[in-house]
Image 1 (cartoon, helix red, strand yellow):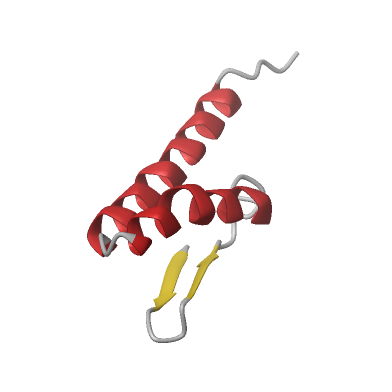
Image 2 (cartoon, one colour):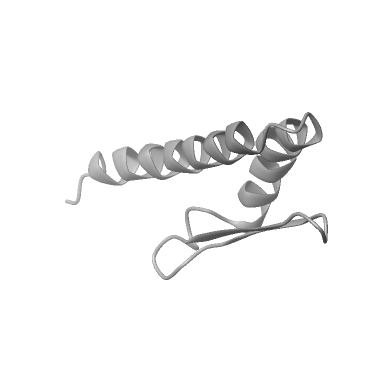
Length: 74
């Protein structure tokens, strides 16, 4: 997974990798960008925006991992 920020371009993107694309969908990544990164970046808090992005994405992956671990096969 890669998080790309182009400050002069005013563009942000999250590229998921093989294995995470089913968990971190485009919609989830867009929501993390809009809710976590953009508000912090607008305040000039680039470190906090990046940190909140990482924490938000990690939580999504953790929730999915727990859900998968709790699946029982019969």
